[in-house]
Amino acid sequence: MAKIKYQLLAEGVSEGIFPGAVALIGNAQQIIDHQAQGLRMTEPQKRPMQLDTIFDLASLTKPIVVGTLSMQLAEQGQLDLSASVRTYLPEIQHQQIRLLDLLTHTSGYPAWCALYPQADDTVCGSTHTPAQVVEYLGNMPLDYETGSKVVYSCLGYILMGKLIERVTAQPLAQLAQVQIFQPLGMNDTCYNPPLDWQSRCAATETLGNAQIRRGESFQRQDWWHQVLVGTVHDENAHYLGGISGNAGLFSTAKDLGLYCQAILKENPEILSADSTAEMAKLRTAGLNANRSIGWVVLKDEALYHNGFTGTALRLDLERQEYQILLTNRVHLVAKKSRFELRPIVHDHVIDAFLSG
Image (cartoon, rainbow, N blue to C red; front, side, top):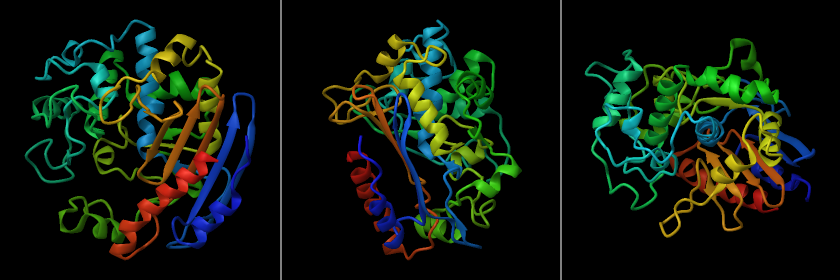
C-alpha cells in the first residue's frame, strides 16, 4: 500500500479547500502512514492540526454506529432486518418499510427535513420526547415507492437509531460505547464530547458560513452564535440532544483505524465473519446507486462513506486495507460562490486520496 500523498494534503490547505486534515492508511495488522496538515481552527484563533485531533464525523455515524449495531443485534437475534419497521415501532404507518430499507436508503423517506420546528407546534429550541420524533416520522408521507430507488436519507437513519433504542431499552450513545468503542479501545470516540476534549476538537462551521449556505431559510440561529468546537454540526442531531443515528459521533483518525482493523480482522467482539459479509453485501443491484448496510459499495467492491463536515473512510475487505481522511472543510469563512465550489473540490481531493 502506498503512503499518504502528503503533497495532496498540502495543496488542499494552500488552495483553501480545507484549513487542515488528518490522513491515515493501514491494513488489518498495522498503521502504514498517519499525517496531519494545516490548522484545526482558524478563528477566533489559529490552532495547528494534530494527529490526535478529534473530528465531528457527521454522516460517518451512520455506518459506524447504526450499521454496526444493527448487524450485532441481528446476529444476537434481537432484530430481523427483513421485518417491517412496524414490528418494532408500531406507531409507524408505513407497513411496507423494512429495516433493510432504512439501512440501504430505499425506504421512501425524503433525504432531509428540519425536525426541530416540526416535531411539535412550538418554536425552535423547544423540548420534545423521542416518541414524538418517531410519531412524526411515522406519519410523514413518503416521496417515492419503497424499494424503487436509492435516496440518501438522514431521516431513515434517525428512525433506525430510535428503533435500536426501543429494542434494546438503552440510549444509542451508551450502547455504542459498550458494544463498539470500549471493546476496541476507541477511547477518543463518543457523542457529545466532554469539555476537557474540546481543546483537541477541529472547529466546524461558523454562523456566517451557515447563513450563507442556508440563506434566509436557516432556522436555528438561536443556538448557533459562534464557531462550533466539540458541538455537533448537524442541526437535527443537535435538536435531538447531540445523539442521533444520522450524525453526532466524534472521533480521531487513529480510533477509526481501530474500527477498520476490527472489521478487516472479523473480530468476533464486534462482528462475526458472517455478519461482516452480510453487512458488505450489495443490496441495491439494478437501482440507481450501490448500497450495502450502512455503506456505499464502490466499483471495486470496497465500502465507502463520507460526512458533510469533510470526513471520508474507505474500507477494502478484499485487499485488507483502509484509508481515512478527516478534514474541517466547513470551517473556512467564504463568499457564497466559493462556499458552493469548495465541497466539489473537496470531493475531488478525497477521490484522489482514496484512489491512491
